[in-house]
Image (tube, rainbow, N blue to C red; front, side):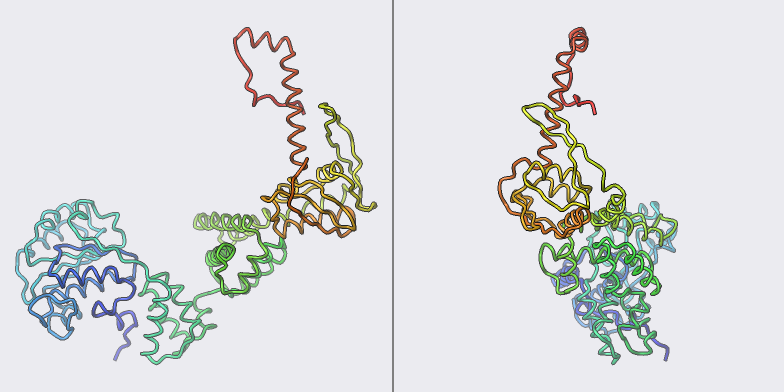
Length: 526
């Protein structure tokens, strides 16, 4: 006896066996039980979710001989239901629209509509992938579809309902089949393997359920392949090898290295991942999935995976969202990139480039040759700009800071990422003692991500060769570096406005043409 694939062997024979389409099954069962049978149906949904299967079950329900009227539970024993299951019923016509697109084929079909069924109650026409019909074919079908004989039922199946003309859709009862979730697929596959007496583990079944992408048929096909690959057994390692699934620990390590800004480690781990011969788009999809799990953990604390919890504690929310956007943007352009490997590498390089710690590392290398450079600082005294040069301490001197003006001067002398500048630039000095820098922050800015604090500590340590601890206290911020910078800009702008108002030539020109100068266009000369 020839082998029968699982997708055919375990195809549902009644509505109770259908997986994951309860909303459709309930609507059909109720309509049959109430004898409110529609003249035409459209079953839409992605591949392998049960469109054709449900159409055949519906046909058996309408023509089953076990009762004097249509039944929602076909017996699968009478000649009508057995012939429909075997595909040789004269009253159930299956037509493939993909190979019968011409209008002549539809006209031939319409000519047979008037003839009554040979054995059953109804003559049922199932047109698969109906959206493939030509416009002329749809037009030829319209009148018959609107007013068919009482003994005729049309069933259309399609993966692309948008391509069906609205005139056809309005004449049909449309039922949309959903993709089947992983849990339902997992339980369905487990039940099948138990019936087949095949040894398996839950991890391998979970991998197959995930790879099925909501399609029962795709999942059963993968299950067949996995059984053959494992010589009659399903083991996690063998299923991973079959599916090209990447070890999660490698991806977790890769993302951890991205967070640390360690480019060398990132590409070392990528090389190890490449040894498993996965598709590059699969690597990126798995990275996106992990970043998504991290985002949920940061908001909901719902992960059961300790590795995800650890990553969520390492990365701040904003940077994680930035990584997610970079990954999604790269994935959207993956299909048009000439080299999938380069597309993934560029994605990782972008993640490293926008990492504040990576930027710090790059800036620190360039600053080693410029430690003695003096910074020009601006200070306002009695509403006048006094530009003075402040000698900032170099690596040979110990760290010391006595007042807020020195804190502002120190801050302006440091090179740091925009992330760190935004946080620490909005703080003022509270005190400095015993190698502990205590800063004052508003309640909105006091929760500084750990990696940003580490960046600032590293900058101070590199500049002064001392390990300096940083403490942040909530309070009233007075004259923060960013506030001082804005005040200076406002004063400079005030001087520029005064110069313009006192310039006779400019004022004569404005008066001559009855014009005016927009205030936001006035800027001081650099």
